[in-house]
Length: 127
Image 1 (cartoon, rainbow, N blue to C red):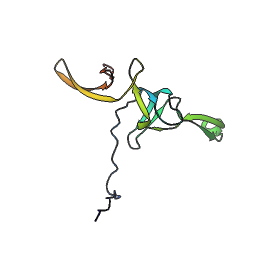
Image 2: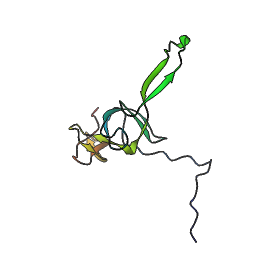
Image 3: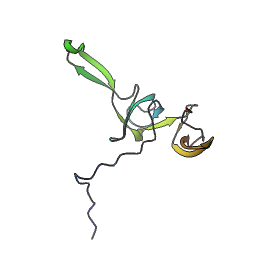
Image 4: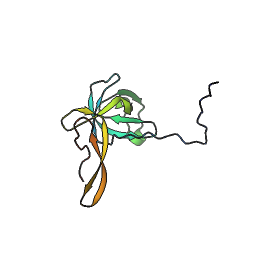
């Protein structure tokens, strides 16, 4: 007899996704209506597993004017979040790649750096 799948109860916290993409990374959209577009990551939401990419998934938002807050009314275009599985990080040469990690030792200090799986290039900025 097959066992029923266990369900998450209200007391159990939801698992956070391990997203290796960071803010200000250049990414290429590999799936969805904006496939092929390239943009900079504006925000990363680890709870929902979604990222905000500049110029990707543009939606129209209707806003009502509010003179007290100096908000003009009308139709504004803004980015919508896209799932992290639909993008790939770009190397400095513009090659889409997966992300790996490697431990480097510099001057007695060890730190984990992100590397491009395709080229072996270090993706983290030194600093």
